Structures are given as structure tokens and as C-alpha cells.
Length: 333
Image (cartoon, helix red, strand yellow):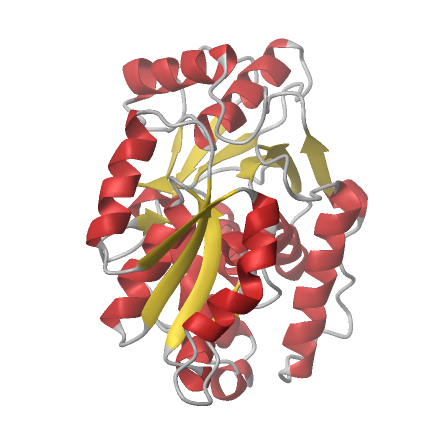
């Protein structure tokens, strides 16, 4: 178990300049996925176990860095997401535990059993929910949302969708450093690729930067699941570069580290289907296989589409015989 983040251990000056709020225990486990009949060797890094509170997964890693800044600036967090937002639920549950109110601007997308259950959790979470239906209406309502949730002269502290900011991406930098330590400990070989869903970009950007910091050659294959944001390789590489610049601004001596390049983060759009949160036949099949053959719980919006991409690319020989890691970001409680 870890409570002191690896970023603080490797660059001690960050312990003074970059606050961290421990919300989960690492390292999260790795294990080979041998039941799927894949051509390449694949390991699972299971971030579903991360988080000590009412929700888990990779969103909690982001909140460990985002919440200290939010607590310093405001009494209320304002953030956005879809009707079944895992991000919004995690942000609410952990923020309220540390004395912050949360307001969520929500937009519509297809509703299935998972989304209905998430809506029930969101309504019970204590967040103030604003159903804006479309992205356009959400943007137009922004001034009203800020005014509605201002306390005295204190504006709400805005967190972007998915917590994908230069600060929030540090959660996935930690994940990559953690994986690098597991490679060094002999728990798995150095992977050529890590496959992850990409909904807002912070996970892919943070992983790519973390592998650079750790000296690994691992590349990120980001399976795009959100068609409402620009999430191409160059955009994600720019976010990684901004996180690197942020670490330098806080005193980390990283002059010898180059920012990830676009070729370090390869994005795939072919498994998104009709759009964000629209289930696909390939995703459903991958979800069923993961559950029946590996005992792995996924969901249709993010992780099932990412695994579907991995399965299809493996069948096409894309990875050859190189080791691959699948990052499970879904953390139900």
C-alpha cells in the first residue's frame, strides 16, 4: 500500500509545492489475461480496486491532485458530464467527504441499466444536478451555473469533464510510475502498449508522460469513446506537455525529460459506434467475454469498447508478439 505518491518520492521538492490527498491504495494489481485466447501476451492493470470511498477507478487518482486545489480555492466544485457520469459521481462522493459541495451539469445520452443505476447514485450523492440535455445548452447555461453556485465572492471551482487538466492528468502519471515499478519488480515484462479508453484525454496524456518519466518505451493506444471533444494524438500530446510544464513550474528538475510526442499516443476511433455512450455489438461481446472468461466487470461506454478494440487489433496481428497491458478504469462499488 502507498500513501505517499511516487511523484513526491522521486522528486521530493514536489512534496512541498504540490499537495496530494490520498484517496486510494496502490499499487493496483496486475495479472495476465490468459482466458481470452489472444495471440499476444496481455496483462490487466486493474484500477477498479483504486479508491477507498463510494466509487473507484481511475477518476479517483485524478481527484487526489484536484481536490487539494479545489479546497484551497472554493466551497463548491462545478463540473460536467453525461447522465451516467462516473467522473461526476466520484467527484461528488469524495469532494463532499472533504467538505465541498458539488454541482453537476449533465447532458443526455442513451440510457441503459448502468446509466439508470448511475442516475440513482447521483441523485443520492448530495450533488446539485442540472439537466441541460445538450452540450449547446450546457455552454449557454455556464454563466448562470457559476452565478447560481457562487457563495459570497467565492466562485465555484470548475473542473473540466473527466478531470482532464494538466493537474488532473498527474493521477495517470502516478499509474504509469506504479506500473513501471511493477515491471522493475518482475511482475510483468515492459509492455509495448497500454490500451485505455479515452473519454476526456487525461488518462492517456498522463500515462504517456509517466512512461517518459519512468524511462519506459511503452506507447499508449487510446480508444476514443467520446465524439464531443477533440481527442486526437496531437491534442493529447499537448496536454501531456502541459502537465510536464506544470511539474517543472512546481520545482521538479525535469530538464532532461522531453514531452511525449503524438506518436507516443496512438488514437483509435473505429470502435466508438454511433457516439458517446451508444453500446456497440463489439463492445457487448467484449463485455460478455471479459465477464465469463476472466471474471472482469466492464461497462458499455468506456471499458468494453476499449477491450473490443484490443481483441480486434490482436486478431489482426497489430501487436505481434509484444506484451500489452489493458487498463481497467471502471470502479463500481
